[in-house]
Image 1 (cartoon, rainbow, N blue to C red):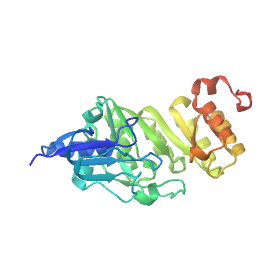
Image 2: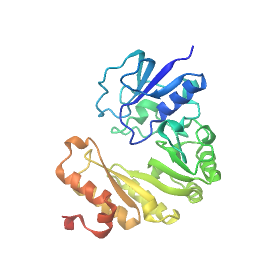
Image 3: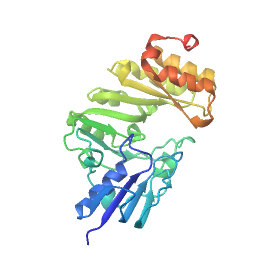
Image 4: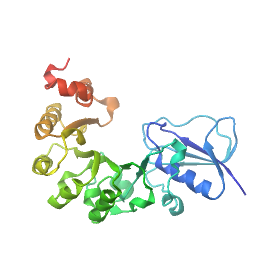
Length: 290
């Protein structure tokens, strides 16, 4: 019997929720009616997805026979059933025309204390999909993998991205410590929008790898962005030093703040200076930023 399905993106619509796109695709494939939740309607089932723990929950009255909550904002252990996880996403849900979103790998060997990936997906980067599972010729591809370079299938997966000839944005912080000359050569063959690396902890090995491989990465600094984690286990002086070192090396630093709600004002000022790129490129020293 045909069911009426309602979807709630608890975090909002600033970034498309991949789980909801897959849920929508699955229910449409079996003949169900799917729509964004509307408070005056009644439903057989409503799915609520929340990615971030700090997002306020949805408190509106829901008239449904069944309510299913999922996403890391609710529970690290919940997973989509295989028949939903492996389906081609319903991009029409967010009116997405020319961009594909997905994961080629899951998991990360690092187990950083500020990150949930290892606990949620395991301490091993493993292949979970081929590109064709979520891409069908779109001009742009958003890769959301937590640590693609650590996966033993990296060569096959990078080749799939190269062969697509699409513009690729790798939006999570790739681990430069897993970089090799062969990996750099393959990355250079990608049609890149932006590659994100990460310098999360103030340690020498990451800096040395960023310095070693910068000459081998044939992109200008605006397409080589490096996340700089602050308000976790570093001093403000260490945060600023990383910003200056990255600019000297030819990378584009980008400040992320752990638990921003309790961050000092000076770190928030640093974030505004660095992440406002027009200001950052015109004002070379934080000390001169007013």
